[in-house]
Amino acid sequence: MQCVLVTPESTLLEAEADFVALTLFDGELGIGPGHAPLIGRLGCGEMRIRQGDKQQRFYIDGGFVEVCDDVVSVLTGRAVAAEKIDRAAAERLLDEARRMSPRTPEQFAQRDRAAAQARAQLRTARSRD
Figure (cartoon, rainbow, N blue to C red):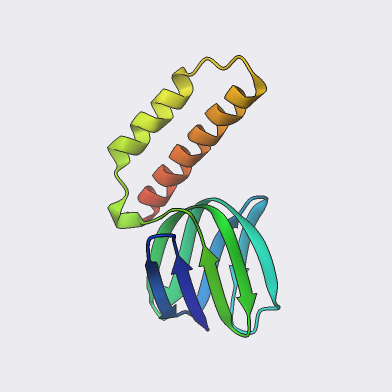
């Protein structure tokens, strides 16, 4: 099957894949050849693409996935290859989120989202080790 990863800036990946795993907003989705058509909302987390005995990993920050006719199209506002994630920057973001003192529901949501993004980046970076 074909896998395409697109951000507003560029197409980061266009390759054949044996299996794709994605983080949806409500869980994880595994996609193999012949998967039923679907459209899903992505969460922030890891995307894994298996090509034979090789595997690529990316941090994905929301967006959508479409599966149709053995093509997996991932559209996201931000994607970073696991090996390019700046762990120190992600740790700083997590620390900043923890230090926030939210007072409104919007501020609580902002803090929770920032912490979730930082944790997902760190998990993706660690998975490459």
